[in-house]
Image (cartoon, rainbow, N blue to C red; front, side):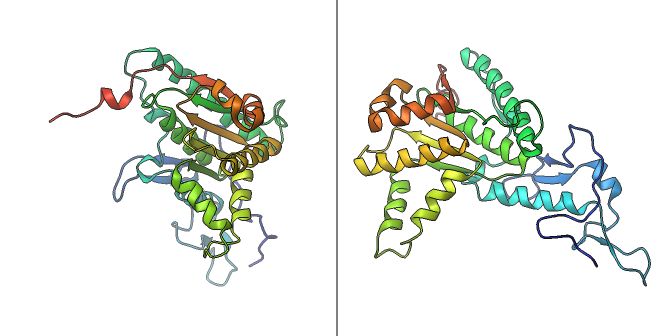
Length: 291
């Protein structure tokens, strides 16, 4: 069977409306923690292979098989599942989307979260323009978020939601990292000549610097040693130069970042990100369970 060149999908494309990417997330859990990404009914209607790999249709026993129209969409579903699984989002928070973002409790947070929903939808539309190279904003970078506020106001949860949404709707990779002690230990091991990870530091940092979507969680918990600040600056500067979408969450105000790395990190954050200060009740305190 004649296949196309590497990187192309030879299966026929199905004409779908703009709001149907050919797949959807079914939240019903039959096994494990999550539901399942399924083909949309419009794609299923054109499937003639029964969903059996390698997704080919045999019109006649003596004829050469042809690719099923569902093939490109099944490949997309598999790729998105892989990307979300490898994103670094903790298991319980994978496949959390905007509809899972709680806006029902009282307070200013409800209005802010509605605003963030609108902004993330705009980011998704802009990302589609990036992929197609069309639209007035196709050449503009996606602007991320610098989310600050006290613990428990929803900063990290929003970053999970945003990352899931962007990966799901774009089919492009994203990563979630937390600036914990473990993160910098891993990085140090990669620089240690006696470590089995030695030599992987450059590839590790290159991945984080170039991945289309990145969440940097708990910015500010680092010890701010000269080495840690240099690593952070290099990461932020690479993403700034490559115009990559970045979300930063922190318990600190943006003004506290001015003193780090001679203000170089601050300067990039204020251009890369919307600066959002979240004032809201502690979600964990409101949902605590007492015995």
